[in-house]
Amino acid sequence: MVAIAQNEGNMAAIRKNGWMFDPSEFTPDHRYPVLQSGEYGSTNEVLALADSPLKLFLFFMLKTF
Image (cartoon, rainbow, N blue to C red; front, side):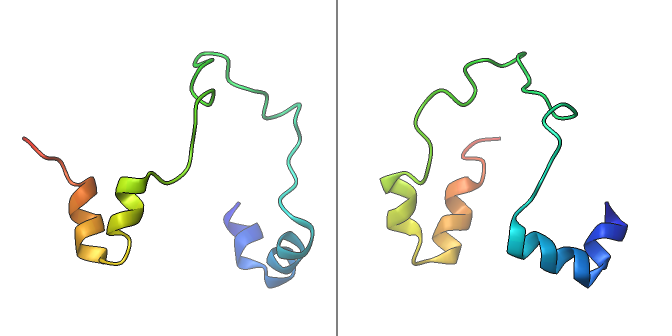
């Protein structure tokens, strides 16, 4: 994988054509069937903090130890 990433020609092809993978090699993981069944994306709470890198960083820090 590192050799592919270090080759500029390979990376240019990936940028142009997208990332291709063999679905038979990377089958869906059925151990967590509901992992991707809900909504996804940025929440309004995170978007409100997006203008401040420090606030955004602190948002993701543990609140308690």
